[in-house]
Length: 519
Image 1: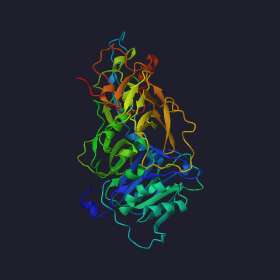
Image 2: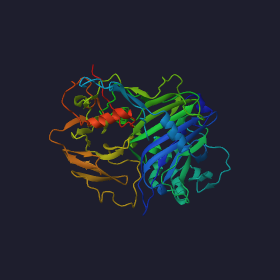
Image 3: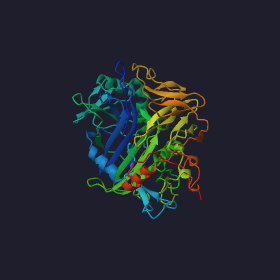
Image 4: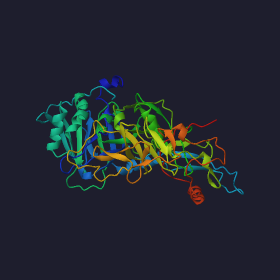
């Protein structure tokens, strides 16, 4: 795919957030990337990219490689700026008014409740880029070393070669924790004449967490190398993209829209299923869907004047392309407010209205072809197709749930000598399957996986409610349900209800919904 005539003048799309690797051998440490946040700053003649990665694994085992069109300058990123920007444009949810028909007298509870602090948390376009000019860089065993740099936290190297295998050999010799099965993931970028920025922690740095990194380069448009990210990506990995530039930007060749207030599900705790809804839309659009969270003036000083924020959740099987973001001056503006006030009330003066509460399955997207099981106690489980396994994933609000995923990530790194992750795992009514160095579960017939501590397969209850995939219309709010109808989901207590109202509610959102409003 092409971006237009600019590609003839500049290097190809700038690729941010590349592949995480894990070490091999006796100290093998599996890596599972579960979120990344990316800030692209579009400047006059270059793009500066700040990347924040969240992953499961030891910081000391961290090694990260990203393809870039030319050797970049590298520095430590500013965590405070990323946090302030995320907070400033966080999604806010305007909830329906309280239904007061069971109130003994006027209470002042009839005003709309809002979730003012909700925010997504977390993190194949273009023709080939030109090989950097100069010819003065040293070449060792077929690897061209363009640059070596140090920041307060990191050691970096920018290297290039026609053969990805020799790149991996060079990285291993220079003590970057990479694995040979990375070669198939890196080779397409080598074929496109990209160079690779390799990053590892400095040997004298003991990091409790991975700090952001910032690098600048010339490119026609910002892009994310998902084909390489797939190596260590967790199912439904959260990706949040901020593009600050001279105009608004939108993903090319992908479906996109703001959160749909007619289909988002929410409950008496005033949580929403936004992130699960996004995962469902991504899956049903073959990995090509982005939710527009913000499109307006940049709220922070020091950044380019316009800001667009996009959010997606996808697994490695959906990362067969590199999303590119292009100028979109006609993109409808969005200020990050999702107005649910026209939906039916879910709260009354006596607490949640039971019949209007969504199923627990509204907050989980198990996956295409899977079945979501409502256990009736506020828990949802996933019954996976026979060729898939259940995996625990993290949600933006810090909760966890089970989802279904292919039994193996074809590009995933499996430790060669890291031990058996199933040695101490107990899947209950199911079988433990090792996947990329982590324990997953394949449940027996009549059982579904629940993200307890740890993941476990549990038999269906006698009167279980089941929903295709979850996070769907069928599992969401019943806006037309009578005030005193039967309960379908767990409710919260009256005192919790009063506390929610008194605090004005500032909870982080959970997951997506796909519930259409009944007329």
